[in-house]
Amino acid sequence: MNLWYGGTIYTMQQEGHTVEAVLEQDGIIGAVGHFADLRARAERLIDLQGHVLYPGFVDSHLHIIGYGEKLKNLDASQIASKEELMVALQERSATLQQDDWLVAIGYNEGTNEQLVFPTIEELDTLGCHVVIKRSCHHLIMVNHLALAYAKIDEATPHPAGGVIEQRDSKLTGILKDSALYLVVNQMPTTTQSYVDDALQKSIASLHSLGIVGGHSEDLSYYGHPSVPLQSYQYIVKNKNFKAHLLQHHEAWDALRAMDFTASTWLELGAMKIFIDGAFGGRTAALSAPYMDDPHNRGLFIHSQEELTKLVQKARAASATIAVHVIGDAAIAAIVDLIEQYPPLAGQKDRIIHCSLVNEDLLAKLAALPIIVDVQPQFIQSDMSILQARLGEERLQYAHPIQSLLTRGIICAGGSDAPIEHPNPLHGIYAAITRQQIGHTAVFNAAECISRYTAVSLYTTEPAKVIDKAHIRGQIAAGFEADFTILNDDIFTVDVEQIPHLQVVKTVVHGQTVYG
Image 1 (cartoon, helix red, strand yellow):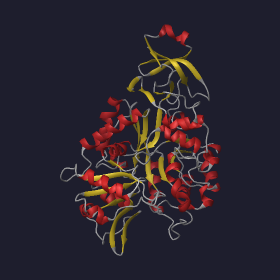
Image 2 (cartoon, rainbow, N blue to C red):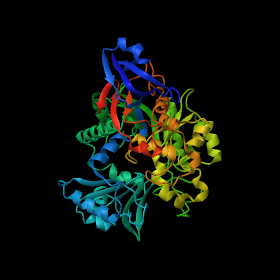
Image 3 (cartoon, rainbow, N blue to C red):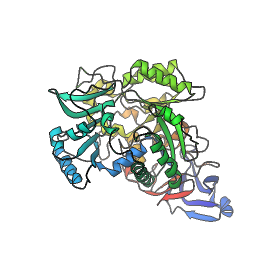
Image 4 (cartoon, rainbow, N blue to C red):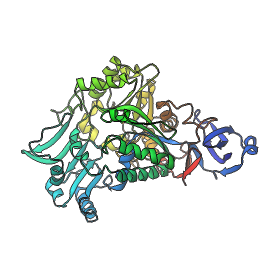
């Protein structure tokens, strides 16, 4: 048996509760309590050296393989101008082999006057297939080579729930929501080795951030679902990572036909459905028009009939749904359907993002058997655009957290990586302060939450979401020994230091995987 001691150990059983020592064997916590009481039972002592131990952090909503792709490709999230982007693309293109694709991920155009998309003609000068994924991943820009590869021209019709943008009857290279899959799903990135490499890079990075597991959705983007599922089956156990995988509705039938057995390391979850887009590309479905685009209310990915059939399909399999909804009109649509077709008793559906509400929606959400996956970092990344998109009146209902918690709705925290950086400390800071790191402006202070509640978003609450609150998310006897060990105390340091704390060790099922 191993005895962890010598630091501050937060159990997350209740606010402020700590113990002196944790006894662990074969990945399970045997006992917690005073060092003197447990010392005799230990075969090995592990001194925390004054550091701070928490239950292992879990990201409740991200795209694990997609994050690995961001690590493999050009990370454009910190690029500050179009000119800087073009230089980075040119440098990257010089390293590519013939038939490689140049992919930039995380570009956030619109956050300042210098951040605009290049023209399609400028991308053509790079001489290779180019794909730029906007930070929200609901909009991409490509060049003519990529369009031709996907057989898209001026006569190609808009797919349902998507837009192939044209200006003066010419393609601009901008593809929104379902239209972007016309290119993305044709890219030569569905080989087993490519997906394996992306997943391994992702898990190594997540471990370094103190993350022991994640709830992911990436089984429909790499060819047949067997490709990413095989990667998970071979990698997560060996790499000690606990993955809960949502099942995109387009992969649903194929996955149900496959031979799959759940384990500690890997399990399949709810049916994932996208209802609308995102604020950045003005594709989130709103009940009233965008302030900066008065003829636009966003878009719905599915018709009402199609959406109803998907929910019915999940219910026929006694399954829950996990639904991407950003705008208030999208949230209203899924609220109505859950009211008509509720999950089985004891089950809860997942509302993912829930980014714009109103008083009526809050009341209806509180009455439903749901949990909400919130992304606190969206507050930071959207601050520069939301007033223009929504106007002052709707801002108070954007990216709610406290309003949901006050009404008794379980919320779990995630990053939606690669949309945001998956560092949980960034999410915790954003949830507490609703500020961008290094800035003083606060986005709707009424929605700020306490430090304890913010840490709960990444510890106790993700376990509740997947019905594992009895074995995960706390430091207690009988729980799995998943620990995140930091160099200082989230609950006592100056709040501005929280995003800068360092991960000392990450421990998954008793095994140190980082540090």
